[in-house]
Amino acid sequence: MISRRRCSATGPKPRAMFECFCPTRRRPPLTLHSARRIDGTQLAKTLRLEVARQATELSASGHRPGLAVLLVGDASASAVYVRNKVRACEEAGIRSILEHLPADISQDALLHRIEVLNRAPDIHGILVQLPLPAHIDSHAVIATIDPAKDVDGFHVANAGALLTGRPNLTPCTPAGVMAMLAHEGVVLRGAEAVVIGASNIVGKPMALLLQAAGATVTLCNSKTRDLGAHTLRADVLVVAAGKAKLIDGSMIKPGAVVIDVGIHRQHDGTLCGDVDFDSAARVAAAVSPVPGGVGPMTIAMLLVNTVRAAELQLKLGVPDVPH
Ligand code: NAD
Image (cartoon, rainbow, N blue to C red; front, side):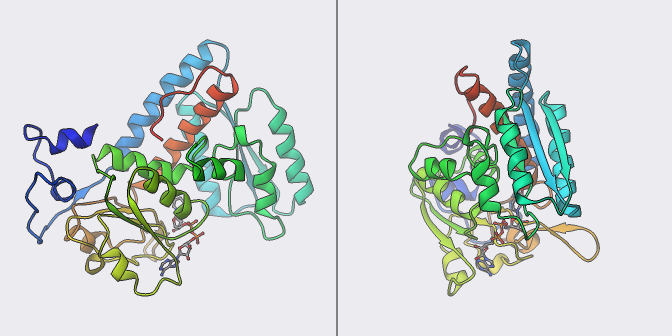
C-alpha cells in the first residue's frame, strides 16, 4: 500500500499529513506554507487508461460495454456534465448513447424509457442526469433503474449494499475521493474524518466509505452547530456543502488532507470550490483544487462503474477497481 511506502524509513520523505498518522514520525511544524495539490486530473487519466484496457478486452470478446445517459430538459450545467461523460466514454472505448428528452416529458414516459433500457442487452449502465424537472420524482426514477445497471450507485439496493458493507456499484464522486486518498497514501484507519454535507449522492456514501476504511467519521450538515469545532479536529476533511468557499484555512487542522467536492461558477466566469484554496493551502498538508480535483475523478469512476457493471452482467468476474 502506498501509505506504507510513504511512512517507511527508507521511502520518500513523507509530508505532514502522513506524519500525523504515522507514530514513528515526528509531528511537523504547525506553519506549513504550501500544501500539496492533489491532482485529480492526472489520476483520472491513469484510471481512464485502465478502463480503456478493460473495455478493449470486453469488446474483443464481443461484449463492448454500453452506457445510456438520459438528459431531461435544457439545464446548461447538466448538458455540459453529460457531454463530458459521453466524450469520456467514447475515449475509453465504451459505447454511449445520449438521449435528450424534453423538459415536459411525463414521469410515466421517462420510467417507460428506463424500463426499455433495463432490458437492452447491449446497455450495461444507465445514468439519468440530476436534477430532474420539478414534476418528476427523482426517487421513482432511480428506483426504476435496474440496480445492476445503476452506474451512479443511487438505487436503494446499491445504497443498502454500501451501508451493509457489501458495496456493489458505489456512487462515483465518493468513490473518486476514496481513490484520491488512496493514491495520496493517506492512512484512514484511526483517522478523524469530517464530511461536510449529508446528501444521498455525496455526503452520506462518503461517510460510509471512510468509516469502512477505518476512519472515525463526523457527518456535518447545514444545522451543525459550530462547524469549525468539527473541522479543526479533522485529519481528513471532505467538503461537499455546495457553498462557495465555506471553508478557509482558519477552520483546518494543520497538516490535514482536504478534499473539495464543491463546484461553483464565479462572477468572473472562473470555477471555485467549497474551500478557499489559497488560505487552506497555507495550513493543510494537501488540498484538492477546483477545477482539476474531484470533478475529473467523478467521470473516471463512472467509466469504472460502467465496465464493472458490464463485467458483472456478463458474469465474467469483477474487475479490480479501486472501491
Ligand atoms: P446538496 O445540496 O444535495 O447537499 C448539500 C449538503 O450540505 C446538505 O446535506 C446540507 O445540509 C449541507 N450543507 C449546506 N450548507 C452547509 C453548511 N453551511 N454547513 C454544513 N453543511 C451544509 O449538494 P450535493 O449534491 O451533495 O453537492 C454538494 C456540492 O458538491 C455542490 O457544490 C455540487 O455541485 C458539488 N458536486 C460536485 C461533484 C463533482 O463531481 N465535482 C459531484 C457532485 C456534487
